[in-house]
Image (cartoon, rainbow, N blue to C red; front, side, top):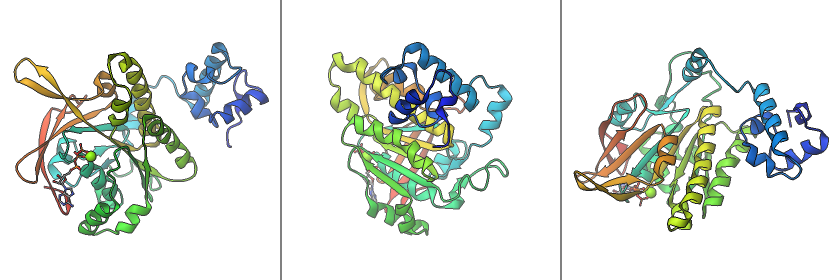
Length: 322
Ligand code: ATP
Ligand code: MG
């Protein structure tokens, strides 16, 4: 343990021990916790929790940032190619780090294929884009991916196939991809929270995939009565993902299902599951739909700084292609 938690206001040795036991092993974990989370630990009052969090934020230099600081942080953003030049260009270059990108669509639209391709491309230095000098040499050295699979659709053999066509070693891709099968939303959330531990252990996690984001929540929280609880948990999960993206300069990708909603003009339209909670937490949102044959259309919408636009790509044996 590197940080001495007793340096925090109101934290003595016994409280420090309890914090560590509950997983709050360093200042950053405490700085980004909520009062509610800390008061779940026995013996920590709301007032004490608030004081610790503020203290930890000071020590971690979290708080108000000037526009210049933010610009500096943004300048370390790097981008991961999707293998589709149209899709990359709609994204302004590629899948961005420090953001959560969502791909929503019906079954077979290609969401899982995009996730697989991203794991492959992470191992291809030519597919990692950044301005010279913006990203340090170590930052993207031996990058690793975490793939949280909630639907049992991760296929190592498909990774091998895509890698072969991209001319990179499939074994390397598999070695550098941690796969976790989540059977329910609690496991899914826990795996996401554990990613920080993998990073502390020295793994340079640069890509996080959640495929899919909402299926477990949707299965477990059925009916109107459970909606508030579902949204609250989903909100916490999205916060974990955004935190990872920001603090560790990762690309975070989530897939999502769609449901039909009545639409004034078209009778029925599709919408991504998860409502505003997911909508506000994802920076880039795509709808993917099937076209003729192996063609797919991805439509970017609601981006804070990019225009709505469509990209056409193909899914073939080789993977994602123009
Ligand atoms: P779901 O909502 O069911 O998870 P999805 O959007 O994740 O669907 P994918 O599994 O990514 O859909 O896409 C499946 C489609 O990808 C198949 O219908 C097929 O067209 C294409 N595909 C998958 N593997 C291959 C392959 N080896 N060669 C060619 N095309 C493939
Ligand atoms: Mg899928």
